[in-house]
Structures are given as C-alpha cells and as structure tokens.
Length: 71
Image 1 (cartoon, one colour):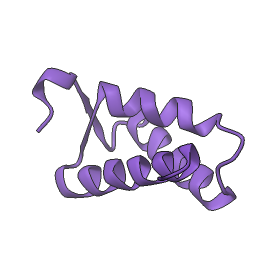
Image 2 (cartoon, rainbow, N blue to C red):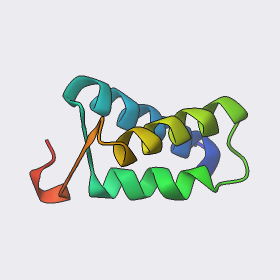
Image 3 (cartoon, rainbow, N blue to C red):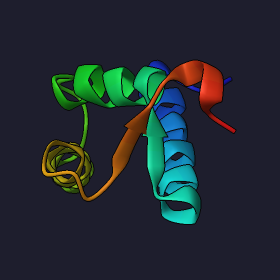
Image 4 (cartoon, rainbow, N blue to C red):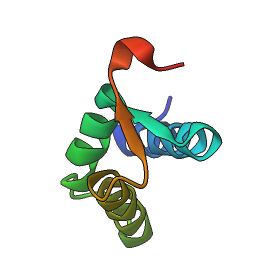
C-alpha cells in the first residue's frame, strides 16, 4: 500500500504528464497543485516543479480550463 506522500507524488507526476501533452491544466488539477505545494513532506525538487507550473499558469503560458472540459 502506498503512503500518502507516494500517492501525492504519483498524482503530481500524472498532472505534469497531462500538462506536457496538452498544454492545459484543469481547475481541479490546478487546485491539487496549490495544495500540494504547501505539503511539508514534499521533496524540494517536487515543490520547485509545482511552483514553476503554477507560475506558468499565472503568466498565461499554460491555459487553465474548467474541469468539465478536461480530457
């Protein structure tokens, strides 16, 4: 059985893969990343990657779409 940290790391990897393939992030995934960035047990490189993706959304380099439109 995976620990909560391992599950979160797997989910973050899935989100990054989807964003890389589509260039968009759903609102649900965006909020998941926001919550994950404050999770104290993340490794530094995971936190930096999350912050980089969140900034890309804020700058308009990655589109934020409603969850209902997400693939």
